[in-house]
Amino acid sequence: METSPQPYQDREFGLEATSPPGQLKYSDMPRSEVDLQQQDQSQSVVLPSTTKAQPLEPLTAPERDHPSISPEEEEMMFRALRAVFEDAGENEADLELGQLMASLELADKEAVHGCPNIEVLEGVKSRVYQLWRSQSSYMARVTEVLANGSRNHENRQQVVDRNYTLSIIRLLGNPALVHVAIPVVYNICVDFGLSLAQAPDDSLSMIIAIASNSDIALPHYISIVNSLAAYLQNDRFQILCLLHGHVELVLSVLFDSYEMERGEMSPEDEQALAMSRLKLNHALSDLSGLPIYSKTYDLFSAVTKTLMSWLRTSKDHLQICACVMLGNLAREDAICESMIQELKVHLPLIAILDSNPRSTVLHSVLGFLKNLTIAGNNKEHLGEAGIIERLSKLWTAETIPQIQFLAASLTRQVVLSSVANISRLLGSLSPDPDSPAHSRTYLSNMLSLFSKTDSPPTRTEIGRTIAAICRVLLRLNPGPEAADTTQQLTKRLFDLHEDVARPIEAMIVQSEWPVLRSEGWFALALMASNKNSCEAVGDCLQGMSITEILCETVRRRASEPSEGESAHDKAERVRLAKDRENTLILLHGLLQHNPSTLTSTRREIFEDLMHDVGHSNLQ
Image (cartoon, rainbow, N blue to C red; front, side, top):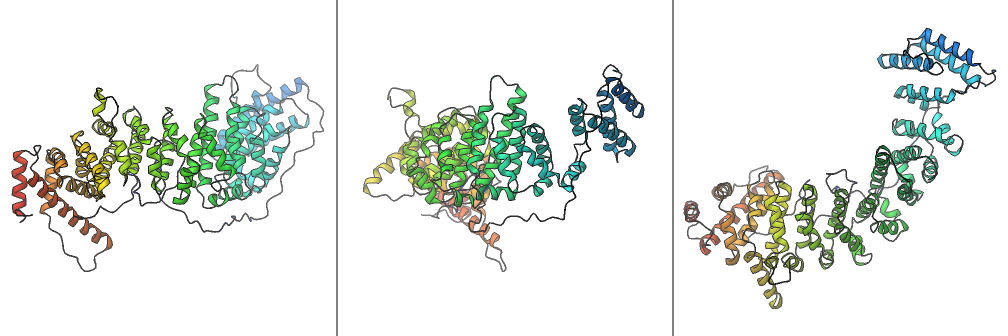
């Protein structure tokens, strides 16, 4: 009989035990839980060049040396302004700012459809200058209108070209102007990324310092946190953040954001604050995925200790951040083993599974646990900590399909090559012999999920779990002491789960992943070779689809190697040959053991098939 099909990597069905842990990404639900591409750990750190042409000198405002304008004169000025531009409304009672707003709106509308009307803008400019130089009380409102009317990339480019970025950022250090500087920094940094190239290196420290100040108003706080997140999406500032040891400060900003939840908040404010945390979490996720992150913050750094403590908090964004960043650190077997054996990181993770968390938290926890499971004997520690019992609750709970898929996929990883964890999966749901649950196992719950879900990835992953169990129990050559345990588990597997092979059938009838079909044929061949498990094989061969695929596979003769055969064609030829070999072994075992689940019609079909291909006397 052939060896187990080679492990493969795909976008949906998880990692094999031989695959290295992948980079975790902050989830938007649903998202793929891992990025399988490993990054070069030896690359050098090079700060991107910021050399640019000599910028223009910033313009300066005129002196405020004119006498104050009387209310009557202001009214006349605005009336003249309205005479120049279109009337913006019928309400003449509000003449102070209304006339200026009308002029600005007209100029803004013309800018949308083409170049601004210079004459209109000159009229606006002269009146704004008059208000400015006379120290009018309307200047704050005028400034806001000007800002709204000029919020486009052309004007932001003017900020960059005239080197205003540095001047604006420096205003963050002025307590009297910080409330004005914050939204401006947000507008030019978040909505116009070119300005980041002009920002000096130390601007990141300034923004972190402002974001660490919980005394600022919530709207300004949200703007500065969003600006910080935008900075941390920039390659140069990502590297600077790591080299200067700022990650712990950024984590503090995320932690302190919960202190901004003061009293009752409007739904809009709650949503805006949550979105700022989301953006910051994305930035931290990207930071922890960089090759130099693990060299800067090792397993026993202060940052790692902070993240470990967040696993025990009740704050969703902190738990997610900890799972993603620690998960990205867990990229090597030695680190994964230390995380479990020394830091005991799996204990709070499994506790989270028991706490009815939100789906976004579950997604991050399951992704992190899957990275940890792949390394060494970590799966044994996870089994001892009760992970199978916790995962079984996710199979039966009403949750989104992606979570059920991740729970099933993690279960498969846990039972791979582990008799102890297979024993746990086959454990009774109740220790009471008189309880109906005594004859049901955790695997029974998994099979119930298979019958209920219509998610192909989840159904297939359950089939792969059954196949993994068969590879351990039906191929293992244990010593005398372990033989009894293996035989008892095999009997329990097939006596208590009559439908155990149906998920294997689902693997075979799907057509998207040929390698999964091969894995299914191998598992059924193992089952058919054992008298105890042959009943389950007969049960899953009742459907016409799998019967037709079986007959087609047996009749397909192996092709000869061709000259100039590509590696892909060779692998496909070898796979098809192994499929045929396994289906022949399957039919031989099935006809030899003649299980009660094999109908007379199916038996005749299979006998004729074996005769046709010349294997009627196969011993």
